[in-house]
Length: 393
Figure 1: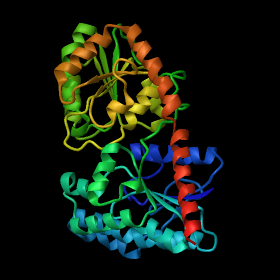
Figure 2: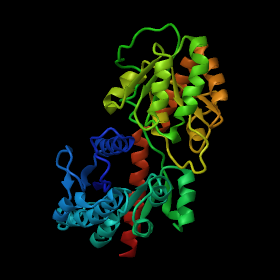
Figure 3: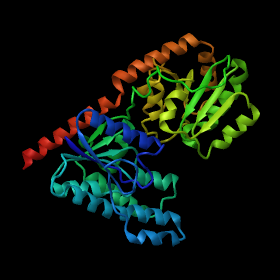
Figure 4: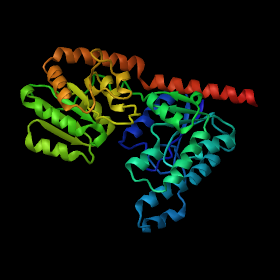
């Protein structure tokens, strides 16, 4: 199958270090390893070989003079649709692909419209309702336009891949018919994150090493993790390895100042470096706080599992579907640092239990959550869309 993979988000480069970039690389590589021919298209230049890059309008050069950066950013996303449309029609007008697969981005509508013009199936991967998130978390400019174009994107696709049941419910609230929504969680490259492999060399310590990977942001529970670690660090002679950066770094900086021998903050690192670092960790943490809307599919938890780490995670949203409490990890109530500390102390005192949970998690990751399984599901959806279009022709 010939697949055009579209990333319309100006803020996400496929060679970047964001989880979204790892997601795109993992899925594209799996499509290709399964024998499919994939063309990558984006509105920004990147290092991806043979990619299709949409031209930026010349007037982009004048936008930095606009005083309101939020408006500037929104306008660039809106105008990028024209460039993506032109690039796709130029690349595929004479020989259309069998499928356009698009990762939904802010204000993005070109993919579904071009697919209709070419008469080919279009699948839209939705990781979050961006217009609603923009209004709630980012003081989104041009909010009415964001909502209108979001609905347009949802209406102009043959099928939506939502990463969680919770997100599917969100989309149904938007008016998207349930039968057009397919729930496919994030996946993981189990070979890359295999428990066996090189480790980074860290100073030796007699106690357990706890680890966290991800953006240091409020919705990742950084404050709760720091509070819990403070209460167990001395009792376990434990260490905390933090991989990532963000506005909540002050919590990590305060902890490092108070417990300098027990905290290693790596900051943001390349994705290829994460597996060797994860193999130095005994217990991996995902301490999400209580959130009204948790519709995410946590990539970090899948990577923890594939690496064979014992996982302690908040029981919220999809997390309880990925982690089976007492079998492949431990679940704790969200937003409860005391309970988090209790389970950290319990597991940190039992290396045999850590090993048992980690081994079980790695087996489940390999058999249920590898990108290969996700790609197969997507291809089945694509083929069903192709069959339906053929019957309508």
